[in-house]
Image (cartoon, rainbow, N blue to C red; front, side):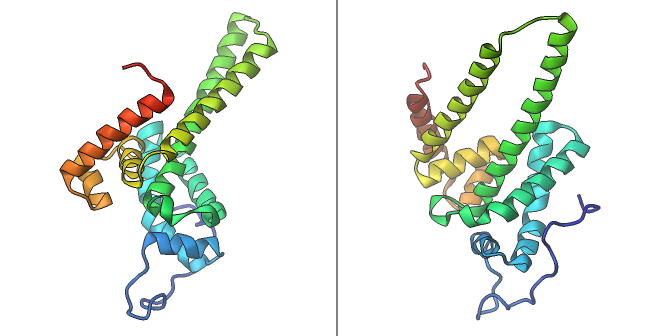
Length: 204
């Protein structure tokens, strides 16, 4: 990814410029600055998050070229949508990784849809437009249901599940990211999965 031009990045502010005590701002604070159009803050976010975003996307796509492209798209989306980030609803890391996972899954679905279309043409199968539209609507409704169910979880449950299932982190790594005891993280994730299952109406 280093070969590509960084979106919106022009320079890094001097150390201590952001806080009177000289400490660098956290990711949440940087994202809020990016939401106000701060390009220097975006440079820092890019440097901190681009490698993690690329790593997550690569786990999903298994293709370096596509992963670089999607990772760039993710960082562009972070730049454009940072104003919508709400610190009270989760960490900045979870927010960025969620965007990355969604973009990667969208790319997989797009590729699969292309293969499916080619297969249908090859087999000269015909499908009514109604069937295709209904499948698309159903898929969007399922994604909206999942989003709403995730919002019903506690912040710790939401963050932990996002890191584990979107980022591929282990229980111990999740505990370090959310700064909580390992046993607490395991319990919260188990309870969160149960709540998700009940919300989505999934059988045991």
